[in-house]
Image (cartoon, rainbow, N blue to C red; front, top):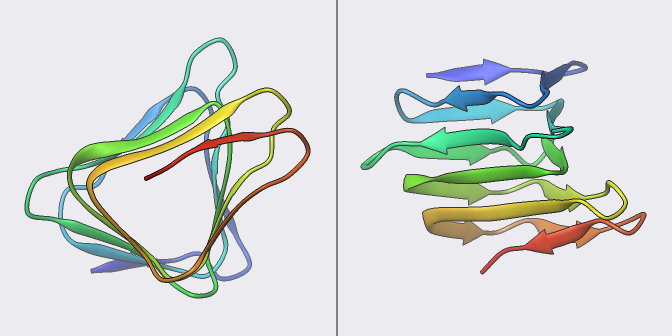
Length: 109
C-alpha cells in the first residue's frame, strides 16, 4: 500500500493520523503543524511507514510515535520556531536527512 503525494501536501493540524498497515508515502510534503495541541502520526506494532526519497516530513509541534517502524529515505525537518518535532517510533531507520531550520527543535534518536 501507499500514498502518492507527488506535488501535494498532507496537513495534520493538531490532529492524529493512524497508519493502519505498512505504507510508503511517495513524494510531496507531510506537515505536522499543531497549535495549542500536538499533531500525531501513529505507527502500530509490526507495521512500517516509509518516507520516500522525495518526501518531506516537516513542522512542529508534532510527534511520530507508536510501536512500529519509521523508515526515512527523504527529509525530516523541524522548522517551526520554538516548536518540537519528536520522532519516537519503536524503531527509526534513517537513511535520509534530518535537519532543523528557523529555530525548530528536533527530538530524534
